[in-house]
Amino acid sequence: MGQTATQIELDPQINIAIFVKHYVHTKDSIMKTITHDELTQKMLNGEEFVLVNVLPADYFDQAHIPGSASAPFDSNEFIASVEEIAGSKDTQVVVYCANHSCSASSDAAKALADGGFSDVIDFAGGTQEWMEAGKPLQSRMAGGCGSGSCGCAA
Image (cartoon, rainbow, N blue to C red; front, side, top):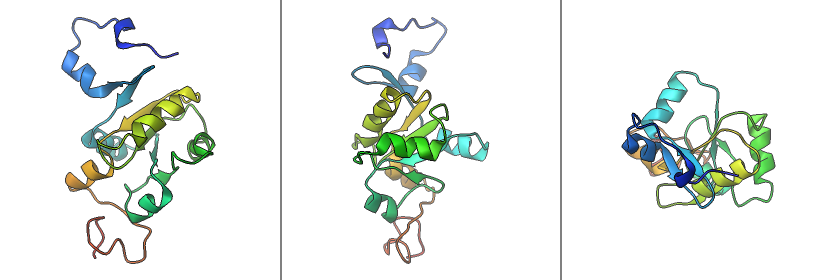
């Protein structure tokens, strides 16, 4: 299955801080992570990937990153839903949830990797980091969330 940190041989030229910043060690594997700046750059560059919000649908409806799709991790059809969104298990998938305190995206990323997806990235900062960086959010609620916190006009 996945490699553990002790099984990875690092090139002495690689800055360990960069390695740690971009990879999160989970129980059975090393998961790639991404920052909001890197995610923004991927979007601006038109890179091919799918962005998936793994929170329950009502949270997605309240506020989500523009261009993202909803595939609730708590659904029994989670893996199949993401495969349908991505079109292939070889498509790069970036998952996110609410914030760094929320484990849904890291759990979802691991489940996708275990389910055969070849390129999964966890945006661990999620909706909160995106919003705090001044980036817009979308809402499916009529008139936005009403508070302006989702980036709507309130």
